[in-house]
Length: 244
Image: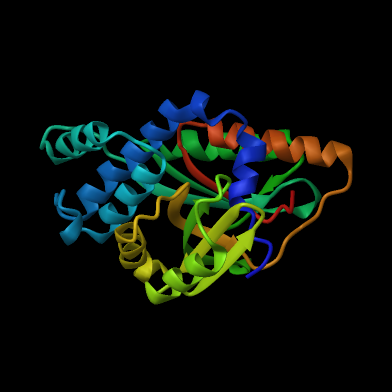
């Protein structure tokens, strides 16, 4: 599965990650709250697979255990009053780049208006549900940063396959492990038990093919579109097939 460069995309489009860590933690906390609610109020990841997935994501993002504990306690509280719903938007960026935006909102009218505005402002357009998602596959994605040279590629690949991974990819100093969504938690736990740490760990929409932009104006607008989407408080994830 060559070409999946989400980790590199993050590095290029987000810049200094530390500056946005608090915002990232807020988004993850929102996901936890919804996972607890949809899991019947269970804050035990062993009995709530969606919550387990989000906790793995939180740990990969270096969210402190105390923060995770506080969020779970808040989510379990009967009077939290937080009522979010998940809504996914699809559309096209500059040059026909396919874009999927996963949101979590307490006001769908506000979010829909914002999404339309963001797409329109930077040369894209909001499309109908299903207009681009057919060209993406939903997969569990575990990213290992090997810039320090701590891991041997062949050993990581063998461990990943032994742990139940579907595919493995090495690109520069980054190892990417793919799983089915259903196997994500088991593979992540098994790799963690082998002392691997993740630079990123979550369920992603992985493009089946990629779109290249050559026009400088389109490239600038695509970067701005991704940035404004990811800075929107209602947006959880932005997936796209831009090969940047």
